[in-house]
Length: 529
Image 1: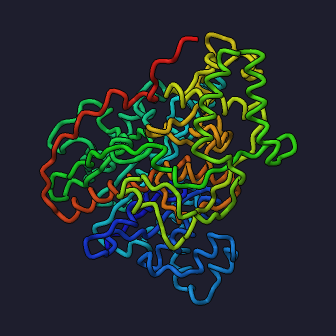
Image 2: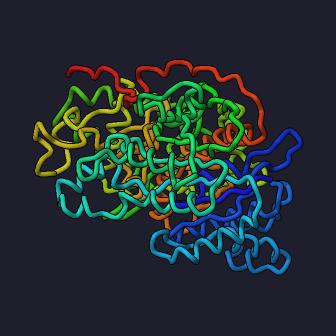
Image 3: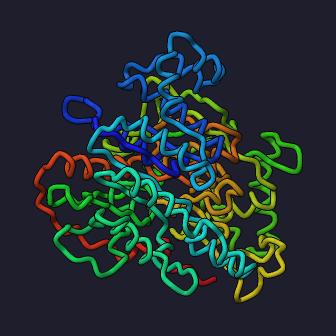
């Protein structure tokens, strides 16, 4: 197996893709030797998944693991079981809770050296924190405090990644980051060009060719956008656009690498439709099924009094929605058994990747609580999206449903799509860590459910297998899901890397031109009222 070291791991999306790649004989191709993550809750998730992988093949994972997922036993009961001592120790050796740049470099180096054991070739993967590179993040911080933004150490956390390259010289590295890094500047100079220069020439005598997963290695890359991988073009249910760099050490055989295969995208509905229908919970008041059912009548009353022209279409969409679904009575839980009648329209490859029959249900599928006023907006927005196949902007809501923000009526109001429905028949918009704060950007497409997405639904859009458990409270679970690399995409990246290391000659073909909608939020014409 090819050793892998994972830096800035988050909950382990990249490592999951590499660790799950198998050959035709069902032999694992990559061995995740060490991962490093600073957040303790994400580290707990990492170590649990390392424990899962330590059994070798999914069929060898003990039933006790599933008992833990269902909440029947504690984490301590699972990891402390003497029968699983070897696997628990292996997980401890793999998953490390350290902050790169803060933990002494010698300590990090010792653990990497011990993990690699001198084996060659090996692969470095990871994505340095991206908050200062994201368009939204840097816009907000520059507006609030320019000096603080310029002095933020996270501009140069990629140098911790660079230091490991300098010290250990991996045969190949894969670095992932947000698309905003392409336009980010520091001190007036482009950050991305600085990253490319540093990674290409880490130290005297050490050089890497920086390749794109989208373009042949013998074609010069002149546009930084050529490094952007669009997840929806590779069979994922999400329009996630990320920079992915493939670094190949200069002394490696000059083998052309295979490009990522173009695959049909998967819709939100295909990805999550088989999960049980849930109702939202109500915050700031009594939560009960009767109180939740009143949401439907309350919205109709509001519209009839303030926007009668909108009332009729909402009623039509509710009627057609409820005709196919009984009103959900459950708000979900940590574990739910799946009925045999669940819809199964997911593409076969995605279903094989996500589903686990041994689970006999789904985990972490629980609706969060929302204020009634927000539920009225969610319900209206879902009906609107169902009717017009577009999520309404703030100024397309009736005045009576607008939030009481000081700037909501301003022509310069930011985030006009602050209430965004994930359209049923298209890939979702990008799942980001903001989902941990509220559900406004992630409203379920089905009006009858009237809620935001659950952790499991968000994990489905991120393509985490159904048996992947996120530790921590629900807010922390959302945060981990939003900060991750989609594992199904990571497995495809791992396949490219494996072929390259195994010296397989590839005929590199130019991928089909991406749809002109690839950089849009799938917006169509809004109706004129």
